[in-house]
Length: 206
Image 1 (cartoon, rainbow, N blue to C red):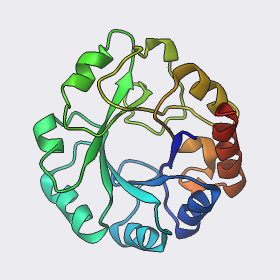
Image 2 (image 1 turned 90 degrees about the horizontal axis):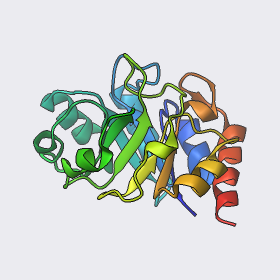
Image 3 (image 1 turned 45 degrees about the vertical axis):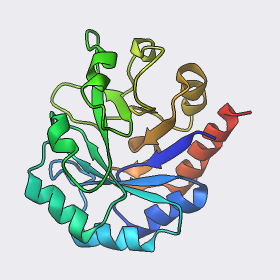
């Protein structure tokens, strides 16, 4: 089965719902302009409640070093995710491995983009929406994804229980990432939608 990350977790119960539905990772947003932004102590509670073998990912958008260091110190995420214009030197300068997000639009050379981050564990592809850094619920044209990327591909952007099976069959990513597609409202996850999303992922592997 493809790896699955449920992003934008803001409550302990939602992190547990994701874990018990079979998600491999949960995402915590440390970008204060996001409706899914989570405070440090709440994030720590969520991570502390996770059962074994479920990873936590801290998401940042153009943070300063102090902000990332504070999250690492208090929350102890397993992985960092950079969603802004951070360069490789910055992303790789912490004690925690990272993935780099790209907002896909025509004209962006994804092979070249990924090659700029050779130390990354993977590249996450999200939809480009003017003025937004992610979590838009919009899909992008999957045909823009090259056949071979130099990093493991994490597919994001507008995925939900209805389209994730087709997305996996067409793109064959290493992992899929969902946020708004399994919510009842922004930042509040729906356990039934999470379960349906996981079923959609499993269906693609049949």
